[in-house]
Length: 297
Ligand code: C2E
Ligand code: MG
Ligand code: MG
Ligand code: MG
Image 1 (tube, protein in one colour):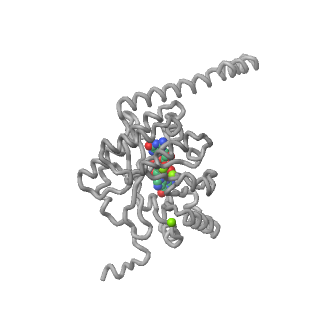
Image 2 (cartoon, protein in one colour):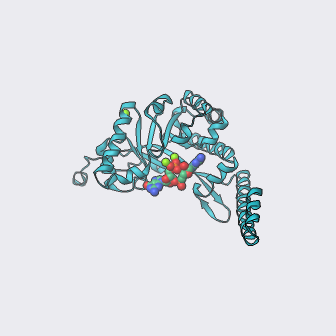
Image 3 (cartoon, helix red, strand yellow):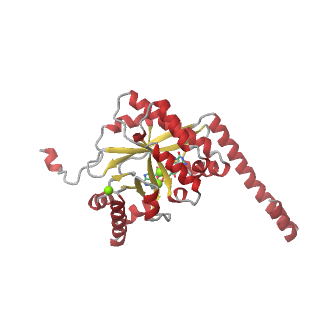
């Protein structure tokens, strides 16, 4: 900031005033957001919502994703877009990420205690959390305290955080894998992971970015692209989830391509934990051979 102000000062007086106030506004905004976030963490103002994923053919709930929301005392429920970046920039993501892991495990434990047919829950983890090397310890501790089997937990990482050169990250990921926790690549196709990297890290699931889902029904190219991803996943023995499925037409295409699971507004938005038990027994979509006239008969 000193350098910038010095440069602005050298460029002329008027500009100096403009630049200075611009800078300090941004600084104040950032400091305010950081303070608000820090306080929110102390006051435990975060909740997890859960978005169902269903088996593409049977329409049965197969797994779900935990998505964090901030219950802001004035502004209501805020989506991650409003605070994750600040949390990452300030390092608060470590604490927030630990809270997310704790909350997800506590919730699974509670559903189990209620005798519900719980399916695996995947938790979003940011690169910074991995770098700190606390993810494995946190997961192991939470699973033990809440009596949860590792098969019920997955972590979602973007390609860039999973395949950064830092050996620390892959060491931490190996440790997580050896707990029995699954590894999901989030927003797949937006980064640059190679086949050998996917194999080396022993990834379990590719979550294909919603951009590819949306291109599915916009001409033959979109379909061909998705098909290529599916056959690559088959070769590596990975499961495929399509993100952002919004239309019946997209679902239809995904069923014929052999995509394993779908997630998106067509199936369900993310819902509060209290709504999940009702969704655990529900059948979401019609299987492709399901005939409505038969059902009526
Ligand atoms: P993501 O992990 O890729 O999660 C999917 C996002 O897409 C969610 O937004 C979800 O609500 C939204 N979505 C689901 N279905 C559809 C659909 O059919 N169409 C469209 N257009 N969108 C759909 P959300 O909940 O706002 O989360 C945004 C991002 O914030 C997540 O993207 C994830 O990267 C991040 N995030 C969420 N929770 C956490 C967390 O606990 N920790 C960290 N580090 N990041 C998180
Ligand atoms: Mg995700
Ligand atoms: Mg995603
Ligand atoms: Mg396969």
